[in-house]
Length: 372
Ligand SMILES: NC(=O)C1=CN([C@@H]2O[C@H](COP(=O)(O)OP(=O)(O)OC[C@H]3O[C@@H](n4cnc5c(N)ncnc54)[C@H](O)[C@@H]3O)[C@@H](O)[C@H]2O)C=CC1
Ligand SMILES: CC(=O)C(=O)O
Ligand SMILES: [Mg+2]
Image 1 (cartoon, protein in one colour):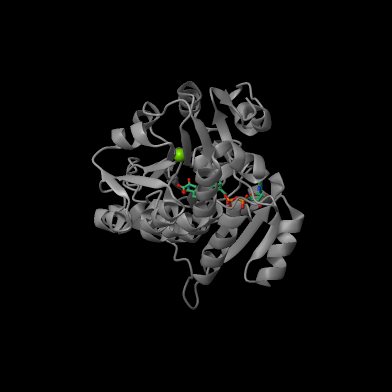
Image 2: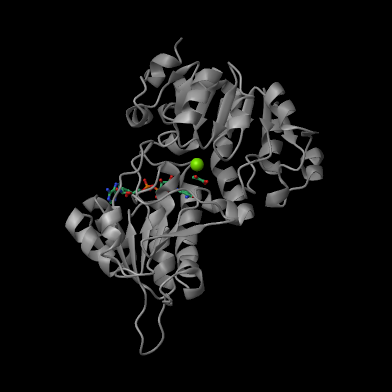
């Protein structure tokens, strides 16, 4: 199989879908690899590093998309990339379709087979291809939130850890999964007073056992969430219902109950955001204010630490990419229900129920779709 990797074109996205190590493994399995010139640069991988392991370096994304049987990327394909996809081609990348009707329509029209990293599951029902980027985004969230809280950036001017005689910032993390856990650990390490909310009691128990009081936990009833948000200096949104649009947990009206200059960091923005007033921003212009509350809503946070993120994502995607290449997409998905759960679009049909519900588009079950 010919595996192709274009350079990412989303603003300030410096990750790359295929590291030279991953390319070398694919080649060792008997596949051919082409990468677009400069694709690895933002993550510290030169074109020569790809050439050295036997990959081809081509001048344009057009050539990658025209020749590759499988295109491996990081972020959802942008409109110009979607126009290059074709029937029968496999696209393996993040998609986040639920909040993105235009992308969904284009992928359906392309006839391609689009597998979303964020809905691939493992045997325990976890999300192995989302987890590494959630770990990164979770660790970044208190860091960017602390910056947002600085007075010159429009924030309350509160220091995370406080100082002797002055108390720390109050940080509320909504969603105690991968992002939420890493965010709580880092915020607590910075000295903040941290509470993690989740609707899953088993998850809260697990966090309580693992972290033994390093941060507090609370059940995320609507009333308790509102109380904690009103007292918070920073709220980190870290909820997920896999594949679905994020539920809106703080309304615009509730912003008036918050402390002026408090910071909302909406990590769930890639699934549409969990605050009513969230809209996606970029690393270049990451924050904005609504009703006196500062919002940080960058949809590709891990791109800020591209080297770490590319390596972490590559570790997770490699075995799946090799199986897709070695067995072919159909046999690979027949052999692994978790990989089949990653199938979002195939041959002109939407195949993810959560996306179908969010966008009111008919869905064909993935197992039926791949039988055709
Ligand atoms: N902005 C960015 O650059 C990035 C965003 N993300 C996003 O961060 C979000 C969280 O991802 P993960 O932590 O990996 O998911 P996860 O599945 O590990 O955790 C989500 C948690 O949210 C909880 N939850 C769901 N609905 C809730 C509600 N109404 N109230 C309270 N808790 C609720 C679940 O019980 C679960 O514990 C996802 O939308 C993911 O796509 C991940 C990486 C990068
Ligand atoms: C998960 C995601 O949206 C990202 O890594 O950019
Ligand atoms: Mg996105």
